[in-house]
Length: 48
Image (cartoon, rainbow, N blue to C red; front, side):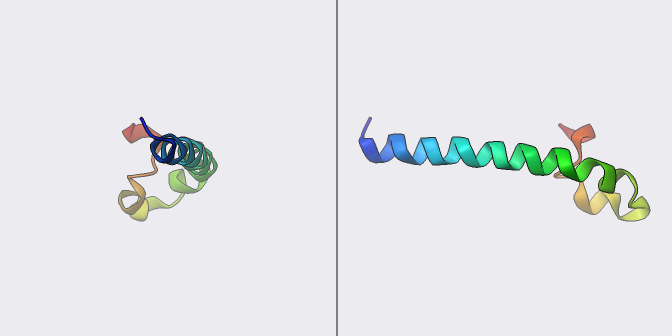
């Protein structure tokens, strides 16, 4: 393992927390968007 690999993993790990927070914040909006809900399926907690 190199220092560069460790730093890249650290950054990716931290960004995953950002993705998780985004997904949590989006849930009320996804639930209320009616027929467009399928366009947000990547962020819908029901699909995880």
